[in-house]
Image (cartoon, rainbow, N blue to C red; front, side, top):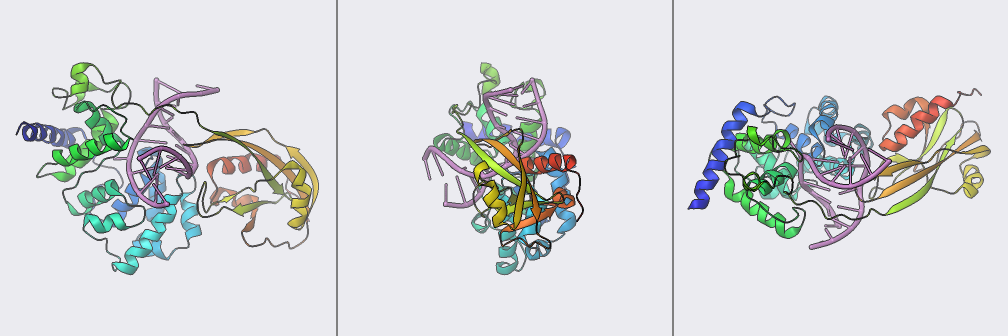
Length: 356
DNA sequence: TATCCGTGGTG
DNA sequence: TCACCAAGGAT
C-alpha cells in the first residue's frame, strides 16, 4: 500500500517534470515510426546522445526504410557505422532488419517477447521500442534509470551485478504508471542525463528531491555504487602499414571479436615485413617504425606499434580475398576503426603521392 | 554468470 | 594523464 503511494508520487512528479523540463526535440522523438525509434535505441546503447546524432542522421538519409537497410550490403552498413564502436551492434542491426522484412512483412512485432528475440534487442531496448512506438507499458533499465533508482531508493550494490540488477528491474516494474508511459519513460532518462548526473547532481532542480534517499542521507556521491576496480590487461601489437605511395593494404577483420567485420591493418612482426610484402606481390623498399599509439577498449589496453612499409607494387596488382588496397582518398569513408582511421590520415599527409 | 565488445566526454 | 562510464546485448 505504501509502496503504491510512493510509486504514484514518483511517477506523477517525474511526468510533470518531463513535460516542463525534459527533452522534446531529439531527432528520434515526435514520431511513432518503430524503425526510427529502433535505430536510435540501438545506436544509443552505451553511447551518448551527442555522439549518436550525426550517425543517426546519415543512417536515416541513406536508409529511409527498414527495407532499404535490409537490402544494403553489410559492408555499406559498417562503413556508415565506423567510428561509433561496438560493431556487433551494426551486424545485429542488419540481421534484425532482414529478419523483420522476412518474418514480419517489414512491420515490427508489437509484443515484448517477439522484440526480445530479435538480434541486438534486449529487455531494455525492447521496452523502449514498446513504449515509444506503441505506447505499451514496459520498464526500461539503462544507465540513467539505474542511477536515478539507486539514488532515489537507496539501492546499495554495484548495478552491474546480477543481484542488484534484479532488484532494479523489480523496482522499475513496480514504479510504472498506469498512464502517460511515454512521458514517464522519457522523463526517467532525461532526469538521469540532465539533473541526476553522475557527478554533482542538481538536486535542487530535481522533482524527486523530497523523497530521494541518497539526498536525504547525503550519499549522492556514493550511489550508485561504483564498479569494482580492476586492472585492464595490456597488450602490444605490431601493425604493418604497407603503402606504395598511393594505396594502403587493409585486411578484413573476422566477423566476431574486436573491430569485427571492419577493415584494419594486419598484425605482424618487423622481421616478417619483407616476406609479408612479397606474399602480397610487392617488394619492400623501406621499413620505418612509427611512434606507438595507445588505445583503450572497455576491457583491454592496446599498445599499437605501427611499422610503415614502403613497397614497390607490381602493376595492376589485385588484392586476394579478405584483403583490400585502399586508395589514400578512400580512407575517409572506409569501414575503419577510429585509431586506424586516425593513423592512416596522419600517414597520408606525410607521404608524397607517387606516379607510375 | 562474468566477460567480451569501442569510442568520446568529463573532471 | 587518467579514471570512469554512457539510451546494453550476446555468449
